[in-house]
Length: 219
Image (cartoon, rainbow, N blue to C red; front, side, top):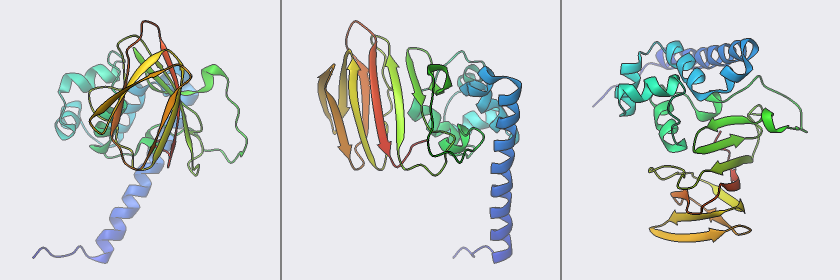
């Protein structure tokens, strides 16, 4: 039978985790002050948290089950990972999606955003932006999503243990959930109560725009 860690060791481990989270937040704040665009880019953020964790690209790739080239391309902003793939990579560090996208914290209860203020989660053919990343105590998460024709959330299913609802503002998408596929036109939408892995794909000829909300927050 494996022995349980001593209370002192457990406390020390927890203290290191807290210190690491603070270091990550501080580093991201510095990066944001130095370069707004760089700080909001997934590649720049990944490089910062990977180096803070003392991991090489090769080590992170091995832990996440991806190729070394994948990590390198993401950090160079040459590859935009899907939300599911990014979640798997961050779990290998480990760091939560919330910490990864955290901006300097805010205590404001009324938040306003211009178009360029939204934090980019993924870029490229599938562009996902998010509101409210600076409030860690929020109960609701809002996404603004744009998918080029043929693009979608990726091959991996999105797994969220909570509720998800979305409205298709423009275009036509296909929703795959519970082994079934449903086409949804502009003006329609869907709501998932409970853990139902899913993925979206733009099956139209024009850019699809989706506004999505989930609770508890994913980021």
